Structures are given as structure tokens and as C-alpha cells.
Length: 522
Ligand code: AHR
Image (cartoon, rainbow, N blue to C red):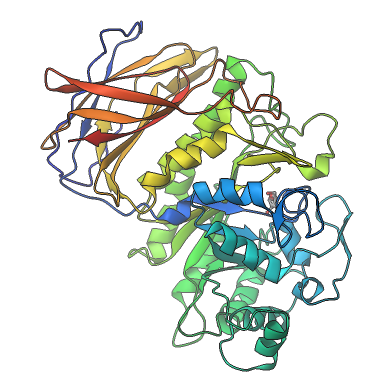
């Protein structure tokens, strides 16, 4: 039984099996209590991540001003239009592991330095997409900046200069350099990561080594514009071991006066089934592989619980946000692609996986206030795939679009017995659900039917809310490994779904292996 008690909305909603339903499995009852509103689901849990890795930036976002691919100042118009529609709250850039060898001066002004991208495939990075292009890009999609500082091979002074270049609102030398490059007004940098995976690619530091760096960067690097402060995010754990979390949170607790401060702790957790290196194919898999990967991804919930418990020890008021700024399925590289480019296809399984993780973040909304799926375009669990002028939207993209009403919504408790379905050696819940009151005042439900074989009849009750219908969209597919490609871009796209009031209840039937988002209509 999954119990969520945060709000007493006094709503009673009953969804019964529809007359046309043919499910062989029993209906599931949901009870929604909107009278005790819970935490806000921060829109920043729907953040994205764009690293200089493979075609994540070059080709995927940046094609250059002279490209025959339609672009605005070098940034592809089709990708911008698609990203605008999912209301991307922030884009983490330039890495990832790449960030700890990135020198911002290589990518500003008229003379760009070409460099070898030693983090990802030793290919040449032309640095034609630098700070000003990144800011242009996030401005075009209506998003916000989340930059990762280079603490591995950079210096505190270099990071200070970068932040001053971006944010200074007074006539300093770096502000004037920015103005000369065409940008007199300060940029806003609301989020700043102090390193990336410093326990691994970011410098293989011990907790003591990292916290020593953290103190200096958190003290001396930040926004130069008092009107637009920056949230500073420390490197956090990448496993369920809590040693690192303990050391960083202890450091936070010991801060005093104006010594230093930070407001976020990062967590990286990929869904990698059956050990490293990732070898689960992203296409042509069966229901057993589907179940294995989903079972793995559900470990995100206990992982957040375990790391949050350590944070609670030092920070019971939850001042420090847990920022899951790398998450998603990490599968085998697309056959024939450069393995360092981390290209993989994206299927209905990824859609279900995305919904399960977003639901976990929403349930932990009091602590998890930011997350960034890895990655936005052409890399790992991407929203968008491109190939030259071609572009296709993935099933994961459609989930992010369907979830837009949950951005800054208020979580509402929903109680249900999820039941189970079994595939070989793997048993999973049949249903995963969240409810929230949107900024539009509507009650929104997300209902994921994990079972790939059976439709799921939802039999729900919500007291105190007069619902006469439920309308929305369902993302379903012929098979768990169905996907969209350049020749078949609409194999997996959301379809309308509605539930009607019958004998005082709303009736909904969820297709197998589907993600459904509906609002209740009074
Ligand atoms: O997202 C790919 C890589 O995964 C990132 O660069 C790194 O931070 C993580 O290990």
C-alpha cells in the first residue's frame, strides 16, 4: 500500500471500470485527499542537461550561423521550438565530466580556441558554442542558466572571472568585455554547480579534499549582481554510500558568518541494469528486459530516502535542496555509433521510466527541489534526436510535455494499493500515481500502468471535489520497445483519454505500459 498524506482537500473521486474495459485484472482504488496540501513540486525537477558530449550540443543544438539547417544565430530552430513547448526550467551546462576541463575564455569573443575534448572521445571542440551562445540558447527556449564550475583543472580566480563576466551589473573590465561581445546587460545565473562528480572524473578527490575546495569556491565564487543571487550546489553522492553526503553536510553545518554557504547538494543516479558498463540494448528488447530496467529505476526512491536521512541529521529544516542533476536510463550505445558519444534510442520503456522518476521526485518535493535528466539532445535518455536536418521527439519528450501542469503544482496525497505484476523473476507494482493541484487551480493526476500485458481499470475516490469528468492524454505504444525514428516519428505520441462520471464515480482505463495525465473537471 502506498500512502501519501499531505493534504486534506476534501475531494472524493471514484473511478470505476468502464463498461468497455476488458481487463482481466482487478480494478485499483485510489483515494485522493486534497485537504492537506503538501510541498510544491518545484518546476526545476523538470530541468535538462546539455554537455559538450557527442552531438549533445554540436549538431543537436548548435549548427552555426552559416548552416543550411534553419537556425537563429546558429541555434537550430526546430530544437528550440520543441524545447519551448516543454517549458524547460533550466539547462545544466557545459558538463558533466567535460566541465572540469572547460576553460570559459576559450569560448568567448571573436577568437575561439579549438581544444581536444578529453572527457568524451578526444574529438575537437571548436568552442563556437560558448557562454554567450549558451545564454542566447536558454533565452530562446525561455529557460534559466545552471553552470558547472571547473574545479578539477581550473582555479577559484578563473571561476570568479567567469561569474563576473556573466553577472556583473557594474562597469568592470569583465562587464565591458561582455558588452564588447554584444551583451551589455548582465546575465542571470540562478544556479551554479561547484564541480562535478569530484569523487570520480572531477578529480578523484576524497571527501576531505573536496570539502576543502568547496569551502573556497563557495566563499569566493557567486553572482556579482546582488539583485540576482546564485544558488550554489555542492557535489553530492553517486551511490547509496553516505560517507560523502555526511562530509559535505557536516561542512555545511560548520559554516559561520560570511565564511561560505551553499544551498544545494547534488545526487547522480543512472538506471544501469546488471552492472557497468551499461549493456542493455535500447531497442529490440523483450518484456523481461523492460521489467529488469524498471525494477532498477525504482531504486531511486530508497536512494533519495537514504541520502535525505543524512541531510536531515544536519539540516532538519531542509534548507539544502537535494538536486538530482543527472538521472535517466544509461543503456548500450547505438550499434555503429562512437561509444564515447553515448547515443542510445528511446522507447516506451523510457517513457514509463521517466514518469516513475518524476513521480519519485514529486513525492520527495520537500527535499528534492531540482533535477536534470541526462541528457537533453542526442545523448543518453534524450528528449530529442537529430541527424543533420532531421529531428524526432522521443517518448521521454512526450512525458515531459504531459507533465507541464505539474510544474510548481502542490502535491496532494493519494492512497492506493498498487498491486503487483510478475514477469519471470521480477515483480513490479501495477500502478504508480501522483496527484497535485496545479497553478491553474485544477486537480491533476498522473497514472502509470507498468503492466505491459493488461489494461488497468482505475477505481478511485476523492472526497469533497465535484468531478464530472477527467480529460487528458495517454502515452501508449504497440510494444514496450516501440520508438520514434526519423521515418516513423509518430509511433509513440500521446492520445486523448477521458473518464466519465458514472454513478458518482469517474471511470478511467489505462492501456498497458502507459503514462496517463488527466485533469479532473468539476
Ligand atoms: O552524462 C554523462 C556523464 O555521466 C557525465 O558527464 C558525468 O557527470 C556522469 O558520469
